[in-house]
Image 1 (cartoon, rainbow, N blue to C red):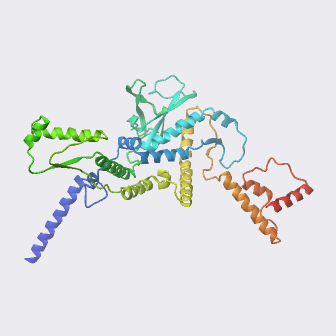
Image 2 (cartoon, rainbow, N blue to C red):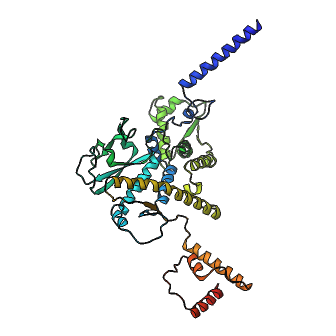
Length: 449
């Protein structure tokens, strides 16, 4: 009997667990808290972050907008160069291919490309529309060999896939067969046009499982808005001077209403008018008879602690130091280290941008807008390159080392050319020194060092 009862209880518990599992499958968890399946809903976080959410966050959120602008501004502080050959080639002679390519990759082009990068950070991807001089409709393939008139940039919300290539024998299987662009006209109206993939280059990832730049930190940005709005509302309510009128029990409201020439039902409206006049003017008198008036004031909590927690979470989500994100440069040492880290982060991101620039160049080569080349590379300047002051400081330190070693009867550790190079000066244009002049010059350098 006991065994049968135990089996029945275990069977009932198993049915309950299976029923709960089916319920969880039918109602997926909103958030990471398995105990509270509606946690994100209660916190005010959306279950799915859409493009409209990200665009509104960038347009109205100061911290999110600053994160995008700081990253784009630093990465595109200077324009890259597309060179023929390997990036290790130190030759400064411009090739014929580079001269012709520069007619396409102009400063105006890089400005549009950086704008596409900005919009990609906001909406997961952005489109670069190619205006080719073939006088064809947008939905037709490009006539190869024609020049590129200009490029324009499209937000992810205005450029979507209208038709996919589902042919198994096609080389572009699984890729867009036609794009649809919601064009915004200068008069405020809009129209939808189909664009052939030849005329579109996508910067970013348009797949369904793509993760946007602002998406991991979206919840923290929402919490920041709550802290900012809530604390601002608290200050506003205190500044509005809401009044509490406490009448004595002997007050006859009929006499009070007749004094204002209104009924008892309209007496509250009269009090509201008096309160509005007091909040509207600076020198306003409120007369009372048998009543005590006190303002309704609440203590406003300092939002700094809560704000800083969410700010750090947002900074971690976008991988930008907090001091860089909000522009708060307090401690010199830590601020310098944060700036170095941010420069290194942008320098590494330039590597990914280089691959995308090469892909865009390959697309122009396939359309015969740019001549074909056996090897090409994208080069940038170094964001962590030392400033002029830092270079002179290093050169001064090298001179001091030479002086110390000469004082000990040893040969100097650095030559004159090495010190000039460390200071940021070139030695290639210098005339070779004679034997006597060279000895005198070395003695002068060592003595001054």
